[in-house]
Image 1: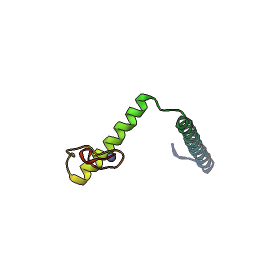
Image 2: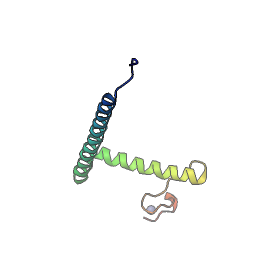
Image 3: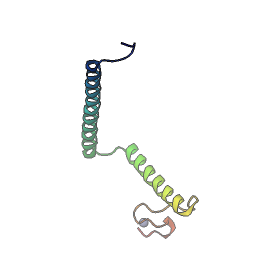
Image 4: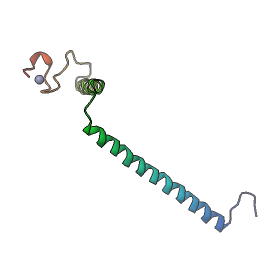
Length: 93
Ligand SMILES: [Zn+2]
């Protein structure tokens, strides 16, 4: 037998190990996903800190600015209201 060649038994054993590893990875991913969702759901019930509110506001403004940039092809001259979406100079909120 050539060096490095595998027998059918070795191949099936290697396949079983590969399947086991894949199952392990999938299981870990599923467990991790479950764990992350639990953390997200638990944090949903907790009040936001001032820093978190600031962060989410900045992300919201950045996403709106990006949308405007895509539509206009350049940075908008004016920020839009986060409630009604019109430029802040024309906002009546
Ligand atoms: Zn407004």
